[in-house]
Image (cartoon, rainbow, N blue to C red; front, side, top):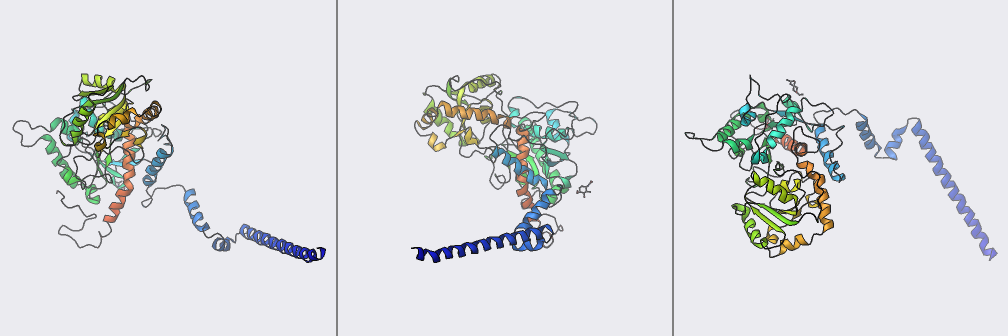
Length: 496
Ligand SMILES: *[C@@H]1O[C@H](CO)[C@@H](O)[C@H](O)[C@H]1NC(C)=O
């Protein structure tokens, strides 16, 4: 045995000598590198050992440089993305709380004559002023159902006030007076109010004031340098009421529309890629100090609205017949007016679930009334588009049911009854967290509907820029048209 072991011991010690030598060598080489590095000969190291260090070095440099905005590095493009991430990352209510180093969306607003905006509210311009001095008095928006589509009013006020705001207050959008420096161009036409108040023909009128204003607007816009520069694609046009801008939209479609839904729009004129969906302003009172719970809300399922509707609204009638004999289900008819608002408020505040069924158009104010009432929305509207859905997961606080399923015998009521106290309470808590995103107010506050809409606009800016830049590729080399070269090709069907 010993004889056999002797050579193997020798072998082992030989092996360990070899290992020892290798380790020392490695250590020596390593130390040599460190010496080289500390004396500044790091070229060699960069290239041979750490191939990516150059890339890192470059990133380091960029990050340590004070961030100065330049043409090819627009800050606004970074900012809205971060906001989106913030929203996804934090599930709490403080979705958009860090504004300390946020860079605002720069908005140029046309000084349209007052007949397009505040004069529609019976405000009278004195002297040559275009805008009311909001530091002294804010013109009031008419109440009632007009308010549903009042986003035009809140966004415009917010822009006006951005000039007087103290820098600490968080404005997502700030007004700039040089359009070359703006991210987007805002068109302050109160189109929903114009529709609501001036679409009826007066005696001896051939065209309504609403139609005339739209014609004037198209003429004005297409004559502007700003419009010609971009073909309109960086313009923001408000058309929240589904019937507003019916005439002008076929001429102004390259612009970004702010809409309630796409129900009345062909996809080539408006679509999710290009346009922004904004909430209705709810008409039901917000449920402040909501101490209710699953058991204290006696009504299981609540619906308020007209049941007989044209177009997509057939489901309402069908559902009425399916649900009318179910216990704890409340169907009430008619639009929400005066006394109706009070009744609907108490109805929604004392219901667990609130039905939203497609009417004439896929969206309706009812969803936002339900959110303000912390009544879990049950949405039966296959084509509905929802505000800020790129950063907000509605399945956390809404129940969605396909129309074809909802119309099956017992399907809907069984589904609703299967949702227990725990699940409902989770959604109710979430509703209370997200409700501020749907709140319109002046002055606007962080994370309210006004700021959320501006952020949604800002998230569209990168795609809009890309389209604009691509359209300029051939602007130098393509053959001149009869009217001479243009910086951006104008869309077909363009009214001039
Ligand atoms: C507007 O901004 C552009 C780009 O920054 C600049 O070249 C131009 O001089 C500005 N115009 C005025 C009137 O300040």
